[in-house]
Length: 400
Image (cartoon, rainbow, N blue to C red):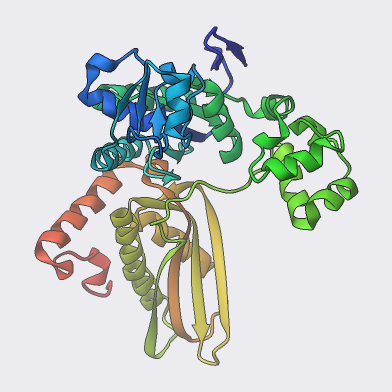
């Protein structure tokens, strides 16, 4: 799976199996210090401390050369000066950090739109749908590292795994300037020897409580009976940490700006029994939903319909697609299949379409490019001339 490379880090073997390891954690190395070195390249290779050079200030960041002397972030500057008297101290430039952070995440989104920033210098990427455009998860990680270095001069370490928790641990083990793939089948083996405080939520106090009971590693915790863990951690804490220790972390990568679902519905002035009219309305609603998906840069894996009858009874039906979509054509075909499966429909008062299980647009690249390009051309025409400029032909008149 991996090997030590002589720099106190793990790196992946070239043939590491990345099947299913679709979560990347990308973490810029020594970010604040590295940004300062972009403007002062003559300091590369020397111990540099970022912070204000006064006894009462603290270290904002330090290069790896300074870290070798025991200098760490948040350390009092006076202590850092004693540990590494030859270090060069440079003042921080917050505006520069914000600029390069924005650029970093822009590059991340060239790999996949589904990017979850978790700080100014790190984030998760879901590359499950990027295979056609980018390649395997390992290739996506390598391409990200290459683009970040080429376009910013910064260095990013990347962990590749099946879950967010393991991907973050992997990026930390890959530092500096590394890439580590944790095969899904090797997840538990990767976690087992790590110290128990590598688990999210285990601080100094919890670590002391656990080690007092002989639980020093993640493997120890994974093998501890739940009643014992509950006594130490409580019900919720025991459940959460036991799952993480066994490699279970179902949290998806989510863009905080992204909607959970996208839908449209309409209520008729009088109840409608004509299937062809329902088909036309579903097409219009599907057209709207598809446009919103493309505008948001997302695709949907599940399509649902909602039908309310004259007596206010309501049914919902849904279907999960083999692959995600962002086209009105696929949405409408699925919605009509769901509607046609209902043999004896009473007159309909309300009908709606909803796209669910949203993910990055890269996930939709499997679809027929001609259809996607046609719908994107419609989007552009509507943006220029207004929404009324282009309609699906079926909406212009009833079929004869």
